[in-house]
Image 1 (tube, helix red, strand yellow):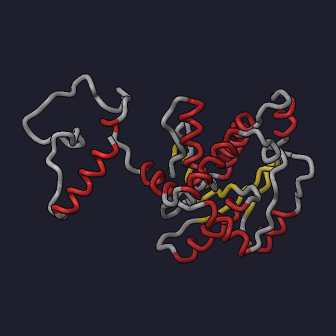
Image 2 (cartoon, rainbow, N blue to C red):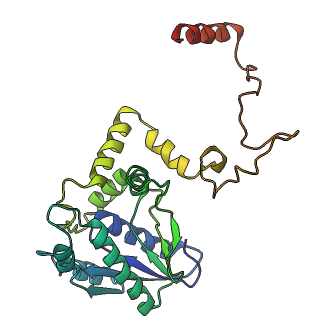
Length: 269
C-alpha cells in the first residue's frame, strides 16, 4: 500500500478506527524498510457541538504534522436531505470530494482511510441487498478521475480488535452526532446481522473475509467478467470446472466411516 517516498494523508475523524490507523502508521514509519511522510487531516464539518480543540491538542502532543480543513457540509446535508432520511450518501460524497482536493493541494501520494474488515463485509451486503452489485471496499483503490490513490491499512483488522486497542490506549474519541444518531441506517441493520452470525456461527466472518479474496468468476453470472458465450467442452481438465463427475476421495475414510456417512445421507433424504 505504501511505497518509498510516499506522502500519506491520514484522514482522522476522531473515531477509534482513524486513531488506530494513525498509531499503526506512525509505528510503521519507524520500523518499515522504506521512508514515507505522514500528514494527518481532519475535516471539520461544522457539526453542532464538535469539540474543535481535541484533535489539534492530541496531534500537537504527538508531534504529528496536521491540518484541519473547515467546510460547513453539515448545513448542506441538513438543507438537502429530507427529515428522517439518511444523510450518509450525501455527507460521504461531499467529504470525499473535499479530501481529494486537499490531497491534491498537499501533494499527498496516498490517502489513508480507516475502514476495517467489518466495514468491507457490511458494504458487500449493502451493495448486494440494495444496489444489486457484488461490490465492497478494496484495500487499495484509484479515484474515478485516476489522480488519487486510496488505501485502507486496516482492511484485514477486526473491528472488535480495533475497539479493544483503542480502549487500551485511551484515545480521545469524538462521537459522530450527525450520522451516528440515525438509528434506522441500513448499515446498522447489516452490522447487527453480522454480529448475530458471529455469535451463533463462530468463524463465519473469517470465512466471508476469505471469500472476498477468493472470487471465482466462472461460478457467478457476470458476462463481463467471464466469457460464458465462448465456453466449450474440451478433452483436457478444465480449471474451476464442475466437480460432479470427479471420483470421491475416499483414501482417508475407512469402510465403517463410509457406511455411517451413507446411512446418514439415506436417513436425511
